[in-house]
Length: 605
Image 1 (cartoon, rainbow, N blue to C red):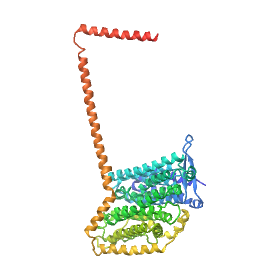
Image 2 (cartoon, one colour; image 1 turned 45 degrees about the vertical axis):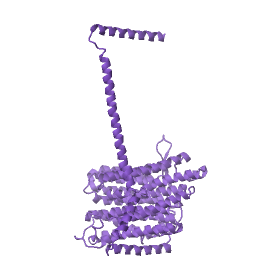
Image 3 (cartoon, rainbow, N blue to C red; image 1 turned 120 degrees about the vertical axis):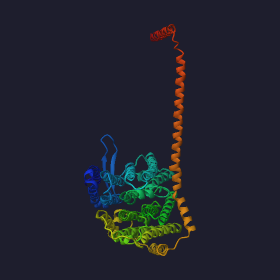
Image 4 (cartoon, one colour; image 1 turned 180 degrees about the vertical axis):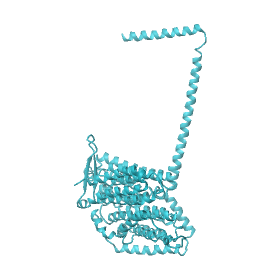
């Protein structure tokens, strides 16, 4: 078999270099060149789908003839699906950016970095060795930091620094886990680690610690509470195509990492870690949904919505098993979320271009000016709500059914989280679809609208490929359970009614209740902790360190000056100005030197 995985990776890195070099000539049209290279790499990945459906595909290459280590690539159902998703969404982001980058600068650098992001994300999901995965993982952090700082909106520098700091926390946890794995087993190859775990019989506490470090490290990129502090500012201030990639694809790298940890350690960890994962998942889903329900900036709504849906996905993995409705529902919901958020973020970019704002209070009635844009955005919302014919219909039903099997307390909280998803989606839809806005109809730029339409088509035709997806990723066959379906219908009715009476009928939540809710959410946001510890704490530490170092330098200057001054006073007394004394001093010095030379010669004999 031809090395298609290596071909795809090579094309991605070459596309990055060529895009950078061609940027000065092609300007914003470089996006078409980048999209062509990304599409070609994606086609190479698509061609091996039949081979992967029959079994995993491995490719190994020597780094050099000197070093014995190898660079391995693996394509199974999960990694290939994610790699193709990375390629497709990066293609759409590149085409979308042609018009988006029209009046901006450094086109070659932007599109080169866009392709390089696709390269690092593809490398992370295809890597065989955990060390190589970590290598690509770190580069998926550096590139968005640079893009946000250079082309972002608002407080882009502080946003980039915040994203970098939280990512460093996740990277530190992952590195600690990798070190423990290598020290314990002498290998980081994901293919043989499950066998080594059975052979070495380490203490369950050590295995649980390793799995916990890895899961928490991967959870940072999923914005799982309490590692979520980077997500609102990153999604709001990042360029729209990059925000789409962060939400649709990059957050899924965290999901992928957790799946790999489960596949390695699922037979070795206990209930303690499962309970921790379940609690974090529910807190994330509830907090994200509640925050999205009270925000007015559509980008913030989508940011907290992403956080909430990552909580759904993590809950599906909470029993750390590689089979079952929870595992299947989580992976299907991962793909559903990628498609839905891709549509919604690209629609947000179009709203910014056409209306100059994404504040839902100022967008009232804008659907009349652009019915197509509104329809596309609603299709994205359908996937998040979990309505047919999107993938979310099956994935959310399976996750609700899975939560019922975990017990009524967990199921109740999961139902609340699903209800909040309905509320915040219907809220912005009603704002946009009701009211009157001045101005005539607007035309969508075709290079920005085409990717959204293609994503919407993929979302609406999920019934044609969902069975093949479950077969390719070796998942259980999808089922629709009646009780979760009934819960969804009831939640839809109550959620729509709640939003309708508060927006269309003007019913207002009492200030006392709203104040308590906002206070609790502020406490749960942990923004105060980040501000006091990471921002003010580090600044104060730097200030005191600066004062101490500056004081030490000043004191050392005075000490040196005093010593030199005292030495000069002593040596000054040796110079009397009397010639006879000077000659005597020279004579005595020469005699002393002669005596030293004689002693050294005698010692040598």
